[in-house]
Length: 159
Image (cartoon, rainbow, N blue to C red; front, side, top):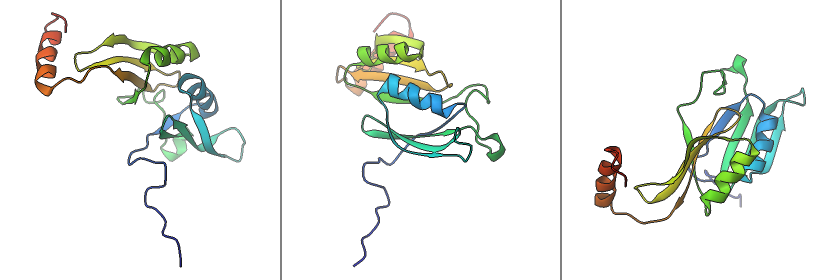
């Protein structure tokens, strides 16, 4: 009897970000320092330096990463003038995790603050041009209360 192959491999979620950067080797080391990433597997190019594919695990989620290969239409954010995408991470202690990422070289785009929707939240830019938001959920807020707080926050009156 032949074993059936799972369409979604064990340990993966439906959605897996796949990032492209200039300097994937350095990015791997940064993600290890900043986010506690674990390297699951790597496929290097023949030159021994370029990364064709790496599978990193951050928390319970996988992130794929590859070096920019412009000849294959594979461009990182630095080559296209930035990224419109932000990767979001929920963590147990956002203050500690945010501080660790900044110490590893991430730049603060939006400092941590308590948000009207119930999260303590901030946004970082990694050295390779990718944007990361980080949060710890602190309060369960009803949709009606979120709308009320959002209206107050957007008028500058505070949350």
